[in-house]
Length: 207
Picture 1 (tube, rainbow, N blue to C red):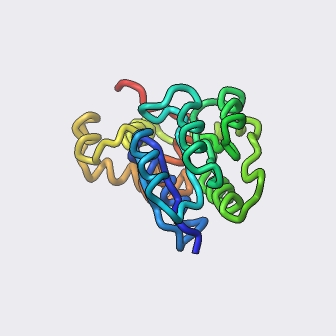
Picture 2: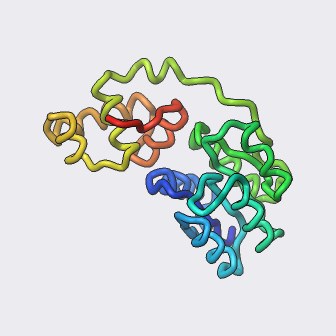
């Protein structure tokens, strides 16, 4: 058994995407989710079988790499993988406070799964602070403007009904665009679409 894996991220859709990656890498793992540093610290103290921590550096309640320092001090034997939108150099100081590796939020699902599997297997460098991923310009270029707007709505956590209202189109049309964009991105559900969108470096800015 892989034990428990803590997924600490305040973005519900990305937290779900990380949970998906954990399930792919370690189907037997018990998932624990946290949206704040306080919740994460409580979970770390409570889970005797904790095997891995996936930690967003920007978790509410954390300042800089303080989240890494706090959780590492609670359970120094449990590897921490920093999962962040920050670039590699900005996240590097986390290593000094106990982080085992860095997964950029631009990483694709197979890369995240592989890093999780290596960490659970005891690899001392499961994802060794890599250089930035090359932008997937060719993929983003295949999305139509409306597909891109629909994807940005998904990143904001909107339901199809809300996206339809915002774009003044029907829910059926939104579903059609979702089907098309997921095919282009090579994903099968909304959480995977979020991962793909992160890999494309999209930001859910104001509409």
